[in-house]
Amino acid sequence: MGGDLSRRELLKRSGIAGAALLAGSACKDLASGFTKTSTAGPNDIILSKGPDTTGTLEKVLAMFNKENQSFKVVLEIASADTGQYFDEMRTQFQVGGGEIDVIGADVIWPAQLAANGWIEDLSELFTEEMQQDYLESTIETSVYKGKIYGVPWYSDAGLLYYRKDLLDKAGLKPPKTWEELLSQAKKVQEQEGIKYGFVFQGAEYEGGVCNQCEYIWNAGGDILDPNDPSKVMIGSPEATTGYESAATNVSSGVAPVAVVTYKETESLTVFISGEAVFLRNWPYGYSVATGGAAEGSVLKPEWVGVAHLPVVNAGDQGYACLGGWDFCINSFSDKKEQSWEFIQWMSQPEIQKMFAIDAGYIPGRKSLFEDKELLKAQPVMELGRSSFESTKPRPSANPFYSDMSLDMAQAFTGTLKGDTPPQEAISTLNDKMERIANVAEQTFNLGG
Ligand code: GLC
Image 1 (cartoon, protein in one colour):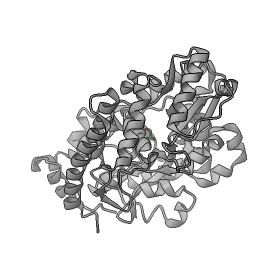
Image 2 (cartoon, rainbow, N blue to C red):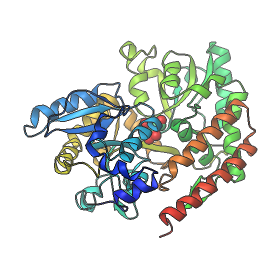
Image 3 (cartoon, rainbow, N blue to C red):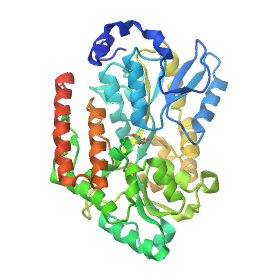
Image 4 (tube, rainbow, N blue to C red):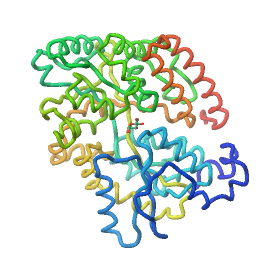
């Protein structure tokens, strides 16, 4: 079950000196950026994941540990920012693999991790028959060069949240275009004295990349060629229009300038404090917004509406960025069997259902979308359905995606700040991404 590159080769490529090859277990003591929740015994396995503020993950792991006698699972908590988590992970791999067995991996990682030989090819374990019950979009993000490297855990899609009570009062239906959003936001702001019209994630990080992909796709543009991830398409006039729509949301005063510092939590906090008419966020935001005082929300559940993100031109197909998390197995783990046993346990419909109800994590399994009990207990499953059905993945099939994403993040936030006009930002970004795509093509021969 090896990766495409040998460990030696990948360390060479990663610029790690030969001596580090021998470092193996000594690396466990390196400051990794992870926080372990308890001590792992010799048979135990380690799962890594960013913090789960709902507490559901800890609860579920406690269930596993109670049920399972032969080994336990210990949680190592990584950074909440997926980019920082990825860097922590990459550092561990570059010094010999680290001690994590099962990686709670962002859907944008499998290709990059697989190309470097850092995660296991699961094709023989996670059979095509087993894959049938999962959303095609989430399966696709786990595939690299025809092999599957991840089991979908939960799925995310960018949603437009709105204050249903206020739109109803103003006689408005949720906006279909950005222009409509702007005029509706201004109207409701004026009538109700609400501080902000719209909040989203404009900070320079991966979440900003998700937002910018949506702006670009919803203006008719694309990032890389979906059929050839070595071909850059971001230099188009449509992509510039996408950047313009984002920049206008800020320059019009509808979105505060502070969005350039907003990640998921900051924007959600503004919305649940009743200070914004519209919000772009992931599905778990629904549980938080409708969860009342316990979640810090001043909103009543019936005030929270969910719609598809707007497009630039009325009638165009709109897309939601596909996010979510998979389970992957570290290639350097010496507990691959236990890791697989744990992943199978975590992937049972009942467990996915628990995550959906308790944490608002949208299940990777398709059959759960027909589960009446779940649909009743977790309304965002229905409210967000049209968005879940029109997701697009970020171009992470390119193993150099994380490098591209850094440039994309910088360009987008720079434009929102007003530092660089949209067209200039897109043109510079296109050049930078082409350079990266060329190196990726030479290194990994993406065309085949
Ligand atoms: C969510 C998504 C993930 C994305 C991240 C960006 O966690 O599930 O795919 O990369 O947000 O902040």
